[in-house]
Image (spheres, rainbow, N blue to C red):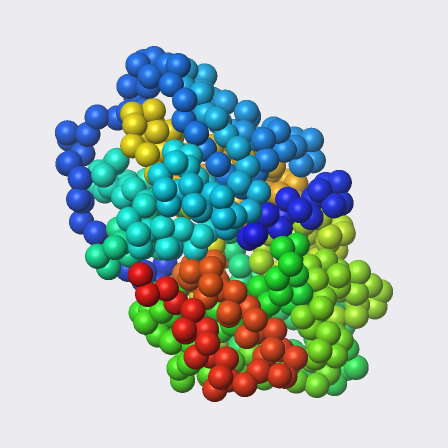
Length: 463
């Protein structure tokens, strides 16, 4: 279960992302040239495929209405159905790693389209040739007109022959490398937002000298029964700031090992930044027991029990933070460590994959390529805690995003020099789980690096 699953689970309990880091250069056009391209979406809008059905699974339950604003999927996909007469039979996958869905996709009996909350649940399906190459449905030169370069690069996965292919399309993107802080107390103490890693270290040391606790770390379960997810994001942030873009990409693809000098250096920086005595709330053995939301009250207490929380931006979407951005809390992008690599920002996104090729399926894929489903989402949730979704398209929809926090987030997302994908949401699921288990042990001080780092590397699939 990943971010969307965690998000839904938490809402039901409480009643409810340009860049120099281009890991793989997207291939030259492998389908027909655009001048010979026949748009299935335009054909569908003439009624040619009216009455056809496309089956789809995704991260939101049908009829889900957080905050009473939207109904998914009718309000999101309804315009497509109205324009084309094609019915979208949408259902929730509940857990994108569930055995039934994975087996159905493996056997070719699954839905036509699946939207995952990241690419990793279908890495093994790509290796087995079970995922359709998007460039066999749409010419790459056309797709290029709709996507920022890195979002095509991060959609490239290896097929059975080891060659990379366009395995899907990102539909919506998010920022991970965010540090929240309780704004009034932060300013009253005389603290300022750090612009460099040295300034961050100095700030942490000043907080400790003042008798304050710098960090809250919620490395426990995020609603899915596993621990260690948050710390994988933090280590990814350090890697993104200490290795070249090429090395970071090699790490995501298993070519740069976890048992490597680069990762060990990142772990040293992690420990020096978060894990020293007095740097964090709670004892070391407790860090993996604080689940998502457990320390929000500590963070927002008067006085705060901690002054910073490194969390993905969608942490705000869980509804735990009280008050308003810019008044009760603020956030900043985790500062750069090595200026050689610019000002990195870590990202992730939802990933649309295709398993059957029919005209009506192509039409729906094209509809997602326009960005209209996500524009509807953005318009519906503007100004709410769910308003942290951005488009990977060139126009970026500045006109839709009107709030102050949106402008700050868009400056962060589109203005930084280096972009990197969240490692644990890109690598195969078995690798992510081993990575999380290692980070739990690393935070509580029981990790044997010489044993556990090779175990993470050994989890990579061989075929």
